[in-house]
Image 1 (cartoon, rainbow, N blue to C red):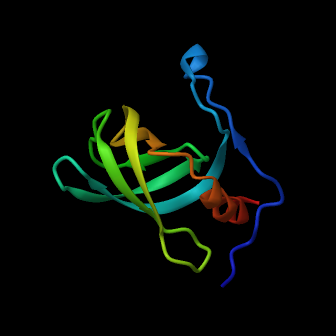
Image 2 (spheres, rainbow, N blue to C red):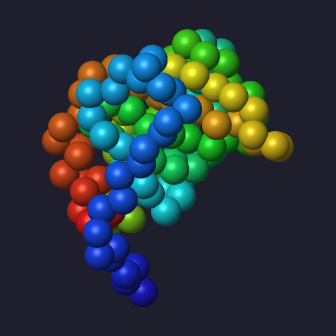
Length: 123
């Protein structure tokens, strides 16, 4: 069954970062895109949900603690019928949120070509 497309892009504004916000690209809200990850320090694997994404990073929700500055290998399972989007990233910040953790990750380099895939699923 085809998923209904959004009628507009929802740009995520995060006032919690304030003056320390160093983002170059805006973030777009996603409907819980599944992500598989590997902690490149210790080799541990896990699953999480991507809540928002942009050309330079993403907001993730994970069920286990992942510390700041942890290098990650990520596979985003975008609902576009293609292979998972593979990216390398580093955890910029992590904070507990109830029984889960919220993470902000920065990609190893800007992923502008990947933004085309992302914009197709959020537009």
